[in-house]
Length: 273
Image (cartoon, rainbow, N blue to C red):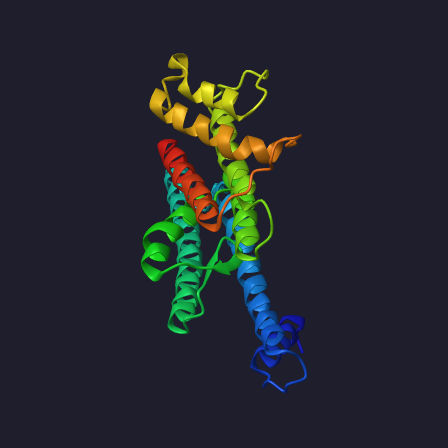
């Protein structure tokens, strides 16, 4: 029996096993959700690898298509070019189908979560708590789609950490959301060649985005808003409180801080397109 078939059969048996009261119901459900999460994450990693290797696959196919074929010499270049174009089309179509198939699977999974009123949502390798369906479809999913590129991997990781900390009632979720926003600003500064190397913190990177020599990527009033956020929210978490009272955000303030970072991250990334 092929190894892949045995693995699939084992997963099916695990998922479809009836509840026998041997473990708490909460654990029973979470273990199966974890298996779904791992399976989708593995598939997503495979899709990303295929996407990253598409240009190389096209190049290698082009070299194969350039082999001399029988026939009059004057026909060889045209035939080889036609073969390269045909192979490139086939590879691009296959890649597009791979991405569309995975995106359709994600949409179906999230639709099933909504139908079951599970208040869950899959995105970028993780199943996390979701808000209402309109917010999920019109705000959250487009946002997570922006972070699929490997360029924004650290932003994706830090923001998910913030959400997990908030949803599980652990400390400092706003700090991790601010880290994700700071990472976004740094990545943009680095990728545009604006980073000088003597920056000491988020505000200095904000100055890079604000600089006239850099085309004023953000306006002065936007710079001031972001600077105030880092001053009032991020810095108290990043540095010791000393004799002062440590910063403590309410639930509403924490949700606002995470939402603020998500809005600005999405806004800044879209400006790079």
